[in-house]
Image (tube, rainbow, N blue to C red; front, side, top):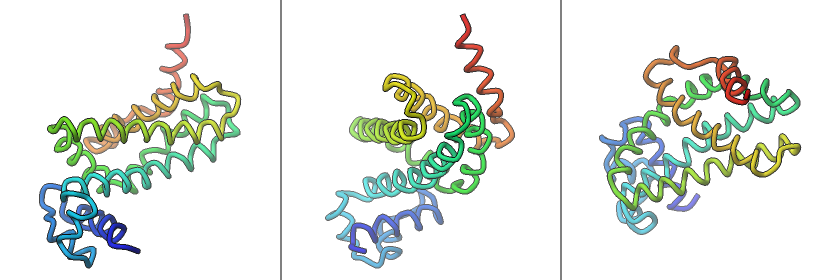
Length: 188
């Protein structure tokens, strides 16, 4: 790995151990085994490095978990696959609890800055485009508007349910309840 990759990996480890608010640039550099100056050279600032590391970490952990479930349920009717995704997502949250918590902590910090908020918005766009790619592969019968709509719904649900899960894992609606809500909304 190069210094950039070492910094991302070191930042993830340091953040998960200490939290966003407590981690210092020195902690990250030491964890990565690189000089403190490498942070500025590769990322501009510690805050930008922290955001990049968390986007990658949460994207990999939760995004890969969602992708695996969608792939495993692709042969099911869409509504059944949707229900299974949301029944199984708490296990994905549990496997990525510290990254999810650190990401929430970082999101609040980033949203206080207009440039950071725009960058986070761009990352959200990339997030649901990643979900859309998986949906296209798993459900070729969907047209592009349907793929985009389902991807945005899934993205909104994973964000909000992740926060709810952190507050109280038992508070999440079941996949069947979410499927029932979607079905009820589709009725005229």
